Image (cartoon, rainbow, N blue to C red; front, top):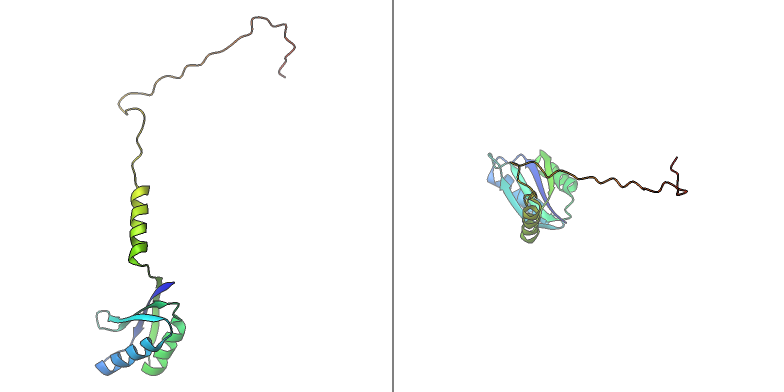
Length: 124
């Protein structure tokens, strides 16, 4: 299962960013590492079954401050396309048999009464 992990790390200089990237890349299962955020203080790690708590603790030990912001399941492009197709299928409009301007046709009921009441059938 692919995961997208976002960790907020105190990175004030290029050396700190480089150090954080090295630590993240060495973790087991990591595929991609990016630095994002307004102050370039968020480390985005994408990988298969990455231990997010272990990675956050390593960053805390080496850089001082690190907090885990989010862990999400990352989907491939094929899975995203399948989801879009299934959403399109689910959103088909319902067509009604009659027009809303006219009322539905009346219901006809027919009662059958036995002309010969001599039968032995009784309903209690």
